[in-house]
Length: 572
Image 1 (cartoon, rainbow, N blue to C red):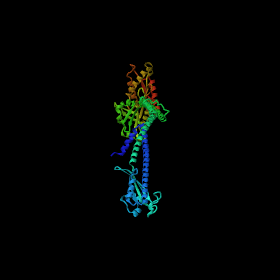
Image 2: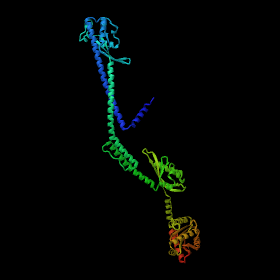
Image 3: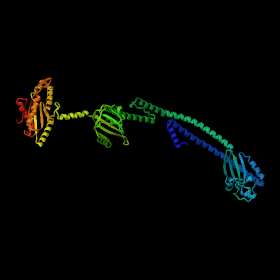
Image 4: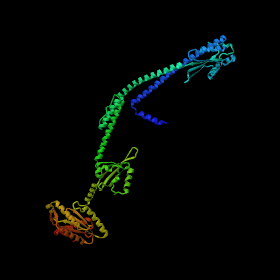
């Protein structure tokens, strides 16, 4: 058995697949069919009513004739002979359209004159009903084995039939009583045939009219739709196709001012194009930003599978887009961060929607590098995460620059020795420790002899080479716990931590003078270099850092005044 819901769904789908013209035509045709069916049935019903009314009239006339004949028989006294009544019936049956005619005797007549012939008795409920009520009854019969007939039973009522007279009044009959009835059956075969021909003619006529009207309506609707709908829509469709083919969102569809609906569609389409053009411009701008960004950009889905990367990502990580799409960003991990780091990172992303910080990742060649990473989430209208967007930059150079800045803040860029800032800090710490431990600290002030003449004769580049060579030899003369500093120019400071006596200072000075006695290769020429060295002892010579440096400086000048290439202690 077919599923009604499935049939309904199929009909609905077929209806939606039809075009506007087909739908409109079907609606009009359906309306015409309903109108023609209603009008045809109304006309046929009117004709049927007229046929029945005519048949009823003939039945009443036949019944009236039968009653008048019975009246005549009563006046002559021949009504009591059944043969006379039978003769009267035979004569009346010859009336047009009479199929059957009977006399039905009432109770009062039967009581006075006897039951009469068997066919004159009431034979069915229709006869008995009329005899009881005194009102006519009608009934139509039709079947496959019987022609259509109309049976009418008309009562004989004393002093109402026969023009207000009734001969039965000579008997014991009261006025208004029912003496009997005439049962008349009218043959409707001819009327039915005429009605069938009428129906056929009406249906054929209506069908012809409907076909004619349908053709006219179809032509009118076709012309109306083609002119007002199909042509403007086709024109709009061609404009849409051209814009789609050329991918030129700056084009616009022509607005049909003669057709409000299609014109409004064209205006809406143009407004949509304007919105798309603005959106496309923004998308192109975002795409250029994505492609040309100096920062690497990585976009994943909600499951952290990589969807796309930009060229900066490929340049920094050395992975191509094809190598990473569909994979998890964990493939870039260096292993330098522990699980707690990533737990905290994802907690921030889940609670705030973003995270940024420094992280170490690994390039395709295995090199580990630092990067500054920012991660943000993208949510849909329901608040569900659909994407993660990561951007990062390689901060290796920044790290190097930071180290360089930090180095330059505390070291000399030429000799890579601690500068005066770092030396002063270490000297303060050494003095605090020596004061706490009751130990001695030695300080040496060194100045190259005749360094200016080398700069003047060989140039500053040669002077820089000499200073670098001197710094290397000085490093070899001190302990790792000692601090060697370039004070500036050709001046150097040495901090000797935790010495036992002033002789330790002198020992280091002699070692330096011995090391410097060896020639230096400067500008491919060997040069002999000497130092004037001064020394001071904490706490014997001074207890403050600056005062201790000043004491060593004074001792150095004494050594220089005594002929250079010499060493003097502050109190010697």
